[in-house]
Image (tube, rainbow, N blue to C red; front, side, top):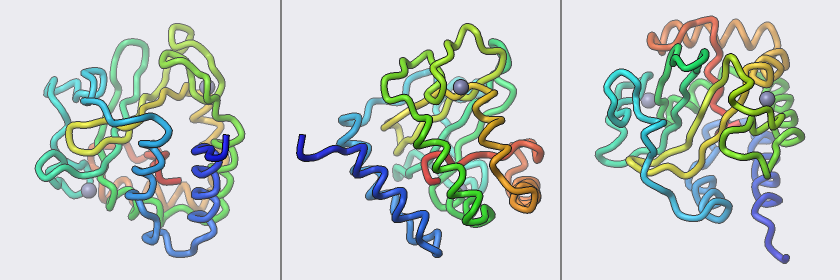
Length: 201
Ligand SMILES: [Zn+2]
Ligand SMILES: [Zn+2]
């Protein structure tokens, strides 16, 4: 195969993490790569609807911007404990980038390395994307998706123990910065939880 989108993605991530200016990160490019990896976007499945409104998320948790009209790039994360959603949010690209600025270069690099080294390309939808543990064996897990307007490009499930491992890679200083930022900007997200802009790391 002369063109390997995964290799492209890795190259792209390496490039962006070497970049001091986090805002230089382009989701447009990410969007292009996602299309190549996963094909065209699909309508956001109900699993990623807000469990409160039972509808699509329509506003960013940070800036309250309308996500659907005109269609914005954003990520959704829902955290489950058993069958119950403990919390959920949609975060627009700009707010994700703002949040990412709170991460030190070292923390970002460590997270990215962990992610790329553990990513299981062949994991099924009901398995953790990083360790392939099955959903039915998990007590706590998160599902995340990258979306534009009413369409979804990509989704993944990550078990709590993998999320905890990722959380341990973040320095104390970065963790504090993230929780201050979360508390101030994202009232919908518990401050002791680090919303992970996974698709932007
Ligand atoms: Zn926002
Ligand atoms: Zn896992």
